[in-house]
Image (cartoon, rainbow, N blue to C red; front, side, top):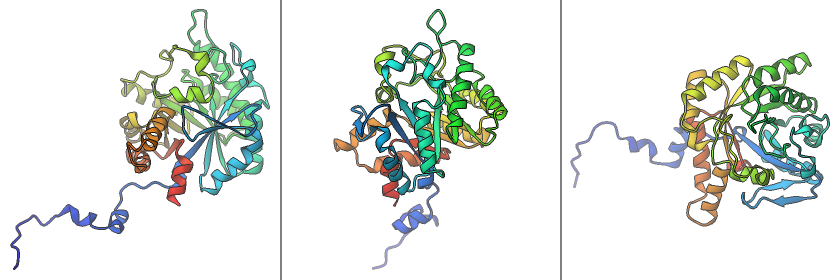
Length: 331
């Protein structure tokens, strides 16, 4: 018996009928080249040390760094972002270790670039891993971060990182004017091909908690906030203003941080400026998803789904602690 059908000519489900068709017609794709693996490197550590607040993520000692980097490269990942965990006794009020040539993280970067010259190495410019108060800059007499006093330190930190072989300098401090002073310093010292990835829209978010644990700064920072220099979470026009300024000052790439709660900002930045735009799926986002997957609350498919949302919003690359895990899946 023939069924009489009356239906519009367009049936959207036709293009979803098979996995092959769904893949062929996918508007957004995720590749290994989109992924940047953050790594924590700890001074005087032997082997690896688990980060309790970030399941599956470890601090690494220099003795195993080469092998860990090889594993990342073998997965097809093109870039790592390195974060130092320095000895507590070396932290001081002015973060002096940050500007010492051949300091711990510079030693690690030099070793990575010597063994894996094609790997793109990203390093943060900010003083918080080096200060005994946990802030990103130098403090004034009232305890707030002094913008202009901090700029020379950031300039020197950027230079020692560039000398160590860093491919992309990433100022994450949110000081006004720091992109220009760093760009000028790089140009004047013949680092004309060193890129600047500006953390332009970095919000004063509560999603950073596990990161502070990872770099062992939480115990120093306590209940303080970074509200006077990181962006208010309510504002998007302010984020666009920040991005515009950083581009004018010489940034090659801009960053939105955190990620999933700020997909609207990623899209707005990409639509407005059409420059290379990175996003950071931060530690709180990682731990939230990881714990949900490990407890069976969510399927591990949510990890890839979350990363596709970054790409759909306009991110060109994503810093994510899931990079190695997803790279295996993409294989």
